[in-house]
Length: 182
Image (tube, rainbow, N blue to C red; front, top):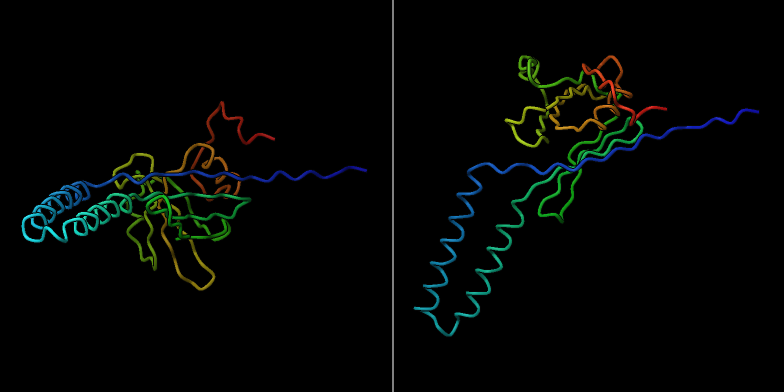
């Protein structure tokens, strides 16, 4: 009697979103505003200075911590979850789908025309809009809606997608890849 063995595929990847230049200016402005408020509180209201100082320090902490955004891709046997993590504390699932809902997956370079179609939802969960290794997924949901999802997957995640999507994906496995071999 032969025993069947099942190979579960589970791949996770954490992506830290690169910060745009506007965020740097926001943080510099927040620090400058904090210094001005602390100075004004010291000069005008010395009795309440410790309260204002603590309030400004707490607000600066939240301004710096909660502007950090990370995405986590979780692939398990053809089911994919994309979570956004803000401030390394708050996690929220922004997209969850099965690979059966995907119509095409390809690199963004050379396919800009496909990215301009009519989509009910667009999600850019890649490292940066200018990153060279971005991939897009077009999802057709059961309710008829179309979604565009942009990712920055590593080689293990691409190999897992290739195993689940097959011909729907424009990708060739590297010659020396043995991660996903049986």
